Length: 414
Image (tube, rainbow, N blue to C red; front, top):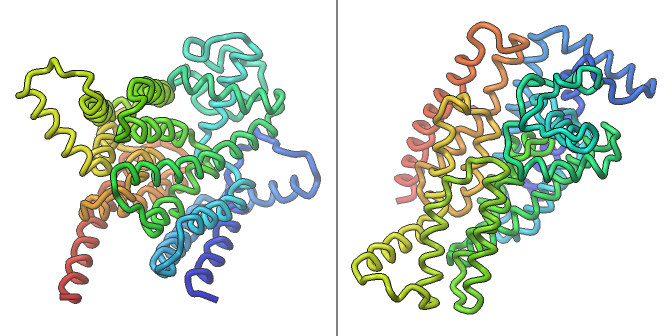
């Protein structure tokens, strides 16, 4: 058996253990099932871990170290000729145990579903009303942020109606359907990144895809914690893929569809509005190639062509850094771990070495950002400041060490 496959099997085992461990953080007011074997297991998890923050934190830390080691070893030992489909298959297999895990590190999915319930059951606007307006609803017992309206755009509210409607007002079924939709989003994003690489004439390697799609941060935040970020990123990547195509035929329709997709992305979460400059240069080039804007004087045309050339050559790096900007504002709390995915998913298209190293270092530090919160059992005292220190000090330290190691390897091979 190939070494990479052995590491993959161990990685799958570790994620299975994490899936079991995740039930230590099931909200005490949430009863997922009254089946006696499950209920005995759930009570044991609460008594063993939930009521023992030190053991809970130590267990999480060990599991994260193991997932990071497995991820890195799987990527580094990949067969040189491994095709990209094999990476996607590995990713989907790793999703299987996480599909059955609990969203231990975030309650956001409960808010997604309740916002849909507010629309379909209470006929209320979740951007105006809050969950506490319905105190008799049993879901409010285990939700967080019940005092605030929906922080997402109306596009996301519309999308969230789908899993709730398919779940037929059943919490557990809706919760599982949402997870299934998030897993469905993974191959969509995977294929779109490859297609975007093709129109940019950049090779999207299996190894770079594995660095993103097999990373524990990606898998845990998207599948286990059920965050909605891929549904913001998918239409954004699709929009750029359409607008950067070199075909002269159908430019008008392609630009309209591309603009609609970018608008859908922005209406999900506002962050992708930062990609508009990239879209603008792509739209300029498409219109210019089709001869639609001959009226523009030659001087600004030259500057716009130069801008387009720079964007086309460095799209991955530019998109990643633009989507990193919202992470630097206080509203992101500098920043939640899943927000890093906004920048990380572009890594297969990035050739800037120090930025790649920095993103991977932040993958590591972001997973350990949860440690102060787990140990304290909440956000009391200085927990938020401690989390930010873990994220940024860890990321910058990782950048420094990573660049030293990269330079060492470069000298060794010269």
